[in-house]
Amino acid sequence: MMDLRELYQDIILDHGRHPRNFRKIEHPTHLAHGHNPLCGDRVTVYLSLDDDRIADLAFQGRGCAISTAAASLMTEVLKGKTVEDARALFAQFHARVTGGEPAELPEPLAEEAERLEPLTGVKAYPARVKCATLSWHALEAALKDGGTGATVKTE
Amino acid sequence: MTTVRLRSVYPGPSEFDPRQLRREFPIFANNPDLIFLDSGASAQKPRAVIDRIADYYRTDYANVHRGVYRLSARSTELFEEAREKVRRFLNAADPREIVFVRNTTEAINLVAQSWGPAFLQPGDEVLISVLEHHSNIVPWQLLRDRIGIRLVIAPLDATGGLDLAGLEARLSPRTRLVAITHIANATGAVVPVETIVRLAHAKGAKVLIDGSQAAPRLPVDVQALDCDFYAFTGHKVYGPTGIGALYGRYELLSAMPPWQGGGEMILHVTFDKTEYQEPPHRFEAGTPDISGAIGLGAAVDFIEALGRDNIIEHEEALTGYGVDRLSRIPGLKLLDAGQRRLGILSFDLEGVHPHDVAQVLDQHHVAVRAGHHCAQPLMAWFGLSGTTRASLGVYNDERDIDRLAEAVEAAQEMFRR
Image 1: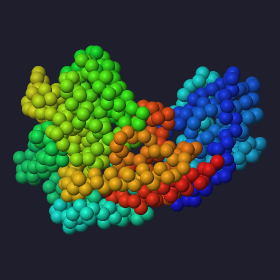
Image 2 (image 1 turned 30 degrees about the vertical axis):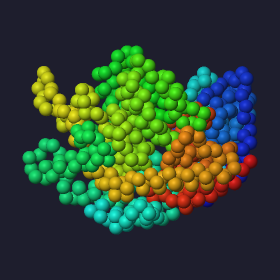
Image 3 (image 1 turned 90 degrees about the vertical axis):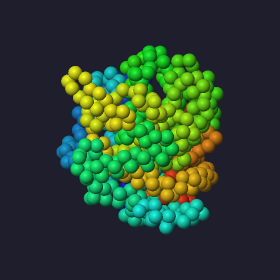
Image 4 (image 1 turned 135 degrees about the horizontal axis):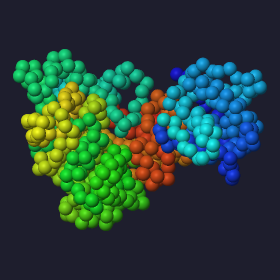
């Protein structure tokens, strides 16, 4: 069996204990709720877009260490990026945690992709992949539905 | 023979030894490190059950209730013999009061869909409790939406037990059914169903008991309980999946219409009119899970050979040990379970999400359930989204609880703030 510290790396434990951007944005341009019916975890992702650039990104909710850390890292990595960058990073991240073929990323995003690396330990634990992707799915739903407050479920 | 082999291992109550008993369960030989504490979700299977099913397919298999040939007659005999074993297991008066179903969920849905529309009027009330599993909530909500009954919820007292006075206060002249769990699956709270039956009957209401968690742990006597329906599932009593049983008082069953139509449940069919079988076959449309029923028969034989008094003595002692051991872990809070807790240890670990707890426990080979346990209203009552739940079986002992406690402490260490 894999060492559990591959899953719970220090960076994950740190973000799980002390999530960054764990707050509400008062007048977001976009928001969506994520719900994992399996464990009852919920996350709300708030987004302020300035044209197509992510001016602010925050989240609230309750979840396990993995889902909290994943949401926290997501907000850190995506702030200041464009919507297109966010989609490209999600596609690549999703592929990495589900064991798919990761798409090529534009060179300027390599550093951001690298920062998500500690989360990819979930691919050895299929039951936990949804924890790592819940906030990303919520973000995607927020962007798709133009900020109407949709709820996305992981199953 | 099952009985003989078990008795040779277990000559008497004083020698009920889970470590010895573990040898009867091949899963432990194939997973030597496994600390299995998830019997509340589904119990492991003894060799007697596994072998019985295989033997049946090898030597006696044919469809039931149809063939003229001897093999089919023998298969039918074994199937009906299994029904008799389940009758004995519940101490029902008559094997015709035992309907084979897929599981407890199906048993409750059968009552909701057959008895419900036939005997309930809009405005009639079905009384359930905060302790229920979703399978004793949702079928009644479906019935409510279909025919306009009211669903009334009995509260809990401050200790997490069923509030009997609160339940009694909610029994009204419109209460037609009290549908209640015998042991709460998410907390292990034992419900005083005898008292509830008495209170309900005094108001003219019928009583259905969800025995999923009780059947593997408590001696069940439906005649002594005087309940109207009792539902349990095979896979939690060390039997196979896909089979369970509904006990129903015969006069109730015989007044109930079929809920599924097909073969097995008819006497005579024309395009104008169909005459139905008497219970229990009226409620068993289609080819049943024959091997499942025979496996369930072997499982109840297994339980009776162990001795149900021995099982409850074992579960009570081990539950007590678990409460004691887990309570000594700072930051761990066992969910309140009223005056009596049996077989289930459900807890919240401060600052650590149940799924993270279960992940670390798995690393220590300790298998538990994490989440809402299909009892979200009860979780909401506790103000939690989920818990970590260890549940006991006949093969568990104090060492398993110690391993659980050590793994919980390791989880705390990992997630220490």
